[in-house]
Length: 414
Image (cartoon, rainbow, N blue to C red; front, side):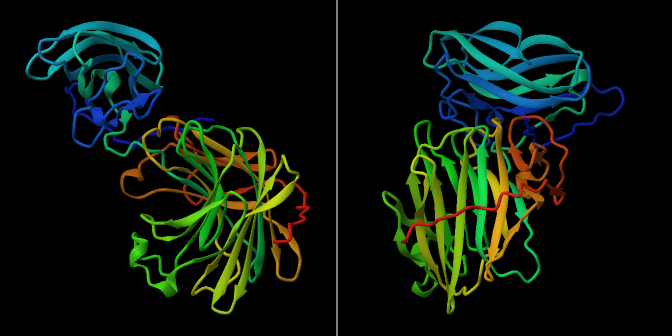
């Protein structure tokens, strides 16, 4: 399953006009290393010096016919570069460009589009005499096949977040929340969150090509600042305990709160188990996150936090996929979420087989169509990024078959 990353602009033309579309350079992606190029809003793409780095645009061509392709670029004055273009994996042309004191429009000729759908436009550098191949200003498309083409025309290159909301029975006092996650794709800067709740979130991240983490965080009361130094003491979450090798501190920028993480080499394709506990204590609630370590055949505590101005059990249960850096939103993030259960204060386990789908739907994300959800077997899945459209819509409801596998949990004495 893929998904289509299109902050979508639909271009219409009056009769007699030749359809054309200008796709800014700052909407392109750096592949395979997303940090190899300098990409910033309203500026040319710069720093393209490595022949192993591809400059790639993604979009959907929705009309057939002739498509003329040009690149607006600037090769350093006095130098020469040889650049190759592929479209949809097919070779189009190689051009030699001499550097001048101003940008140039380099035509790569035209191709015939026989089949509509997602296309990748990729520039590779073959040879250069200067320090860089070129600074890239735009991909220019023209001709009948450019009509109604869908491309990202904004600086927002990340994939939208996607969420599953699990409704609990009305009036239930939820003390425990159990969930399982199987990650299918793992681009760096991905967060697959298993046990979200009104005051925080608990899941796993890909933090770098070599580091992965288990993350558990709880928001401060009020959640009105981005700088935790400005949060009043009586609004701050307090760390009560943490597991071995867990790093604990605070977070900001997206609200503030208490943060904990464990560097842990979780693997794609394996199913991991998460368990969250809430214990009201007067006007506060103590939240504890547990992770099942398969190599130890047992549960371990990640962290325990006291949340002020609370006093509630678990509510607003959810899961999500997130692209938390935004530089590689052309890559698909896909995970399965299964066997959701809650246990109420009277000791009853209840399986959650329904979910409601939402996604980031404001600002630059409002027109994106690379976000979806569904059911596979007895599990839900979430997908975002990847440049293929999904049909599931905001607030659509899903139902998965019951697994009947009530959690068998023996917790450590902590």
